Length: 486
Image 1: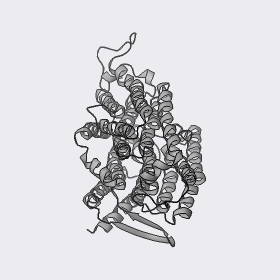
Image 2 (image 1 turned 120 degrees about the vertical axis):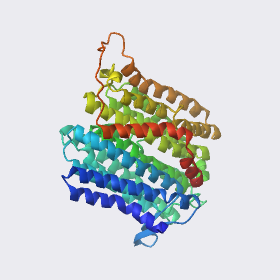
Image 3 (image 1 turned 30 degrees about the vertical axis):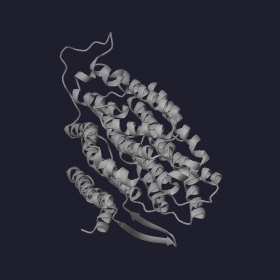
Image 4 (image 1 turned 180 degrees about the vertical axis):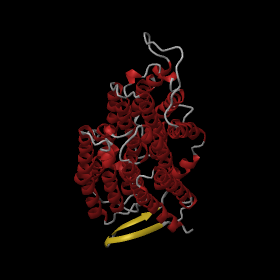
């Protein structure tokens, strides 16, 4: 099959899954089989684009010309392929997890859930392979609209309120800032195509570039940089598979991927270093990392703590992009992968705890490790991945980010990265520790029945937890793409 046909298939398979799930409707087995089959085919398709991307082969596809110079077009490049590989693999795993969760929790509207999940993955493929800012913006907006019904899935007043916050912040920032930045780029550069080294003429005033950079960073609300972060905790009213989609597979990863790609291929690293706004935006990302970590420490609700952890971890990726060094970009891109595996495992575990033990608060978890040993062991491994220590792959991304701060001679950020890792230990490790070693005064029966979540969910948890460990030993499948992209 020609590589351009593979690209078209990667864009089309999630749409086919969307239609197939809707047609299957209440036939559960068929509906879920369609999701898993299309997920497997998508991963195979994206994987077959790996070598062409590494070899620099031009793989492109144009759908529609809106006006001269602005078209709906796609191109395979290494960083986009990295994002697509992660999303396509985790689509399969999350679908498997969702089968156990949605059935075990007796969730309503399961057809709508699986259909919109597939459509969201289609939007991710559009973002990953977008040839220009116009195409990226179209799929970025459709992703927001496709995930909104998932956020409000429960149909309660709390879910609707969370959905309103989600929609208001993401649409408000994208239309108020992101779209304005794209228009400004078109006026200054005459192109919206992603170009290695950037697109702006050398004579462009630094003040104008500073303004555009601010608009991009704040306009990509899915990156959850403070103060445009409230949508993420608000969206935690959604079912746990949706939280996994938001945090690991699609939404927030789309945001930080856009930040990376704009910094690398719209501004270019050399231009980025010369922009006055880069430094204070860099420190804003650092403040987001620190403040979100401190807020996470105060959360007793498990999903809320994980949500603020995500805000903090996204700050790492934005910081890596704004360091404007090759090591910083490599660290940020690697953290997309490592955080995806670690955080999806943590949310899978939170959902398993809800389904099997009906607990949502951290203060309720004392002694739960004896009932759910596999789940809490996976939680421990994933916590290590987020913290960034062996034997997990998170070690690599934190290492490259640290190298990036040293390369940029940002010594205060070196200290901040170390401090934030300590805070990650403080808000994550007590959870599995109290599950296995209850606090003094907590009574745990001598004989406890082991009761884990349904087996499809447990298989998914095992796969992603093992992935966290394997990424330490085998990071090259992603690091080769990253270095080719830089």
